[in-house]
Image 1: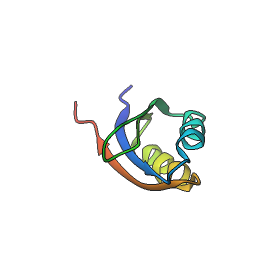
Image 2: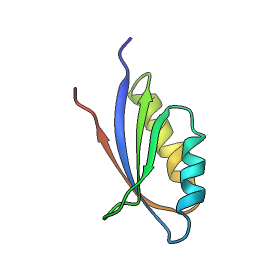
Image 3: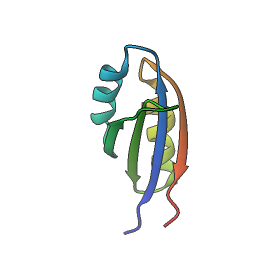
Length: 78
């Protein structure tokens, strides 16, 4: 079965990093979540059954977490 995969780069409000990372790790489909230093604060890797499920995870779940300022989703091509 083919899975859709994406990396999401996330910026968060100052001092909200820990609670955002904790909330992200509780979402089904997120297989990696780590802090970053640089223009983004957190990166995650998502695996989903199809692009519709991946879209739901990003739009309905990730973007509704308090403390998240912005996301950039990059679909994995290989």
